[in-house]
Length: 327
Image (cartoon, rainbow, N blue to C red; front, top):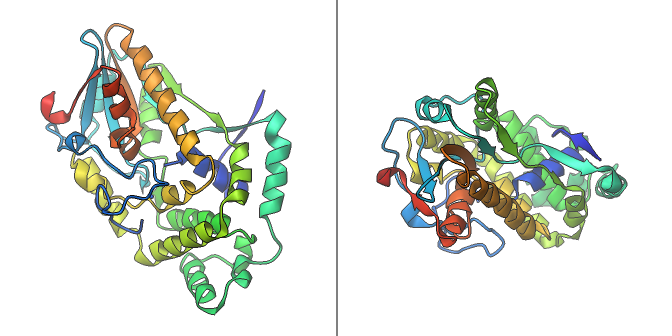
């Protein structure tokens, strides 16, 4: 039995959703940074998989076993709300598809763990605004960031720097019209309208709240500095990356900011959670390849193209993976 929770603006809703994204610096970053963050599971990209789409619209990859095919659409982890993109290829491949495999979005907390989740949430909450725990320069930067977002001091009632950082970056994305639900929300709606079965996993994320409490304070403070810098930088990098994605420019799309995801990667247990999510999606693609015909899988770009990511795992298991240029 489970209780479903939607992402809200509470610290609990924030951290629950953050766990679901478990995947990282300011504004635009290289496809593979010169200095790889050991905490980031998607820091290193398999370069030969990064190509430009041949058809109009976003890039697709193909996974096949010789008899069946899964068409894989890589999507941004963060994009403008209601962004426009050419859906022609998606709608064509949706016809006759056996299923559409989606990244998980819905979060659940099992009843058996809900008391623990509530307790951890209370331990993260504080009646004292977070900025009162900071020294002069850091406090000034934090006040500047929340002021830019139109938020009062009481909004950030916690003594945990990582919790404050995650809440701040969520407020930044809300304020600047960015979301993690597009284009997946549209894709899910189109799939439902076409009466094609959907596979979408959900996970119990209550343990992640306790993991935030165990994150070293210095890691939380480093994350906070990165988040405050992103607030100052603004959404320009994300808007450019979203346009690149819609134009089929994979390299440009991979330059999206990943501040939220990098922060979550610092949480104890995040790497295991990330690995489990990738393994589950790979397993479902394998199941789809056992059925005749074709299916569609939708995967966020970095988890799709990274070393140890979805396509890398499928190749290592003997499946043929083709880039848009090879289709």
